[in-house]
Length: 153
Image 1 (cartoon, rainbow, N blue to C red):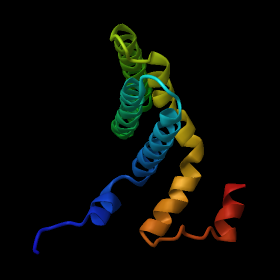
Image 2: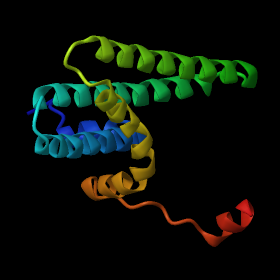
Image 3: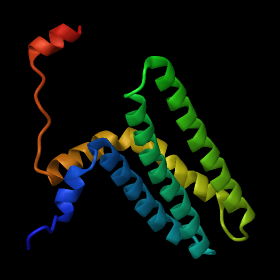
């Protein structure tokens, strides 16, 4: 089939750090969904609340990537301003999402916040998702030579 790109090739074409962060968010989301099923009560509302927070975290990763990518093309003063503005946009978006889940009857803003905070936890888990992606793509990290190590110190 000419022109068809496999899922693996599409994933390989993505920015690697963004992919690793999104995989971490997805893993935390799935784990939290499994844990939330244990508790009785509004399972659907919990699932939706976690989904909203996790989706917002995934979008925040993409926005952060785009903001930093654009800032690299700017001079130092404007880059700093663009990064700060991007931070404010993400912060305000998170506040609006949390406020929205607080106002919608049945949704749990604490679980939405927890889903959004998976962004922070994912940053710590990124070395694990990096190893997973290396195995998935059958890649290895380049070895750092002693010359480079000495130059950096």
